[in-house]
Image (cartoon, rainbow, N blue to C red; front, top):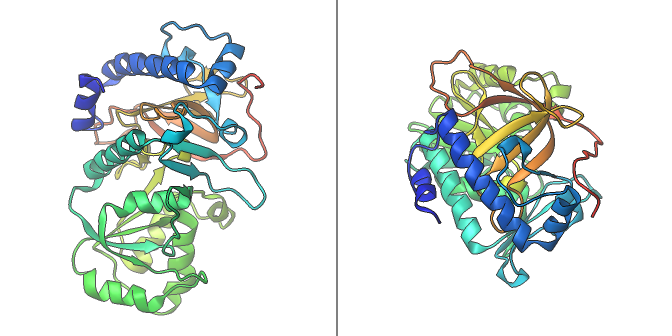
Length: 352
């Protein structure tokens, strides 16, 4: 790795101002595009269809690919024998899932960056961890997005306690043992948004009143089921405060296609914040960059090296919030996610 890249990993993960980041990102993203172009025949064919020329582009002009291509093609920039892990997205029954191929080096880099971002937001103290899921079955080198998230976040905790059994039922005994043993000091709760809500408000709530004031809840995933229940992020937090005295509730946003480049919401303004390792653009239905309003989310990441996932257009709808009124010094862009376009096929790449 280059020295300046190592420096970026070691320092505050939100340290780069707009001009510094643009200069750094422009070079690294052009380098990554050329690298993947030279290593992946499929990616090269896609970019040739977009009339890509190996020159330095501004970030907005760099060619991107769509997330659905990872469902249709085996996109990797390494030899198959070097594949260390295969990650797959969570999909509905019968639907295709994305496959992400990691070599050992890329896996370590993603883990280190996730660790850096987490520690900046929550400190480096390992805390007892309550996981709102069942203990995942892990094969040697292939697992889905949910398992990848559990494994990724579990490194920040100790005394891991899974409170969902294999039948999908809450193990109230395990939950109460954890609370009795660890709740007097700081502890972590991790889970996926709907599963967390369902567990704490449809199941556990019926049994007793629990005080989780020392807890830090980190949750992520789709909001569709909760929006159908008219539960917003704000109401989600209010419910936890009212029923469990829990004030530290943090949503996160991330994709399996760019694992490690995670976005945590600010504790004050509740917006997602880009780190030094990631960038965001918003594009309209004609794929033009827009500065204001909602549109398709395009994510850029410095991390993907074993596969060409460094510049992707998602099916998520988002909005960049300019100059948020927040006491925190947000050097990276701040944004909201409004949901996902259903049954969409985003164009923007040539047919392969």
